[in-house]
Image 1 (spheres, rainbow over the protein chains, first blue to last red):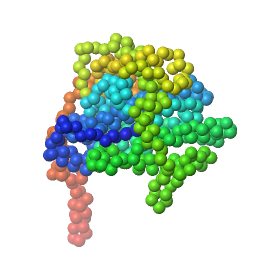
Image 2 (image 1 turned 180 degrees about the horizontal axis):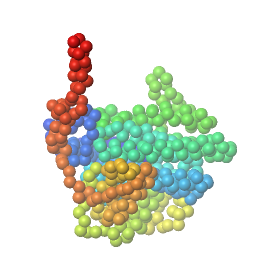
Image 3 (image 1 turned 30 degrees about the vertical axis):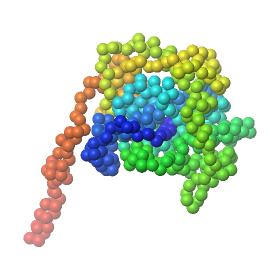
Image 4 (image 1 turned 45 degrees about the horizontal axis):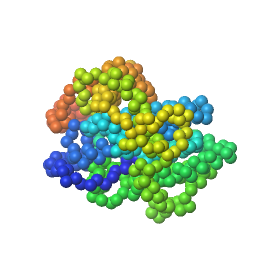
Length: 328
Length: 132
């Protein structure tokens, strides 16, 4: 569901391996021809590193993204909503599994990735560091956060790394239900009683800033970004993704009488670009680096369940088994 | 990582009940704790081939099948699944990809239906008959 995909600018390490020029040319030619890269292909060290970072972050976002919604299963209004929410949360965990598998083909073990999540070394989509206070928050997440993620995922499914594309194809198929059930719940509140409408408006007001943060800060126009786009690791700039999201979903919010808490939000018809107030990128950085309302709780819950499931996993371990990198 | 207080009131009654801080910052997953990986093959309907769809992690074949059912037989039509250990798969290297070039090489048209121009010859024959 939640492909945040914040690709940070890397400091070039002194020890970074020099890629073989001939192999690099063949690799780039393959991508230019529209062909996919497969797990055991030669690939530049930086390609591997950025992909692991991106796919892993996406996987963690699915796991952590299930928490704010999962906590609402017991309190979902009505049996049908409860069933849909259970199915959705199960899908998200399935997505995490697909994504961890794709990342594993690049050589980082699932255990290593999960440990990096537990220690806070690896990031996940920043929006899940905010609380889901009411049922209306769940509908905002289910509709608009999923919608933002689909914009990302559809773009990324046309990327260059085979296993990631395959995982995303399957994920996008399941997401279509997530989006639709979110939209349905969103409309139900918007067009319901005044108390329901107000609850939704309040939730959207609180979520608008995280939603604007969702696709990440404007990209620095650097050689590094250009290279990742040439390698089809990054398929569009963060601003382009955000613009596409606003194009598709602002009308769907406004048409049912919900307002957006930004007086400066409007589309510049001449440029085709949306204009909006500064969504406070300092807050974004502060929260992603650990200082958000729910960062500690999210990791604490994850650590609790890992710790309490450990005895089952270790009891079933077979030390004689040969661990290999999965095939595809 | 030291224990830090959770700075937001926890809303979920299930989470409220547990002592989250008891494990905070102390847990890590051991090497191979997630077991080995299994490649999963999915058969959509009777008569179809089993097709590779991904992997699961499991300690043995029975659990691999169970996880495969949850992961790959949950949302799409399915009548059967196979699993096999990733370590039991043998494959060519992509470095040797060119050994397959022959399969679709233009000079091998003699083994394609499109490599034979039957109608041209029939039409030429019919034309020559009409003239005669």
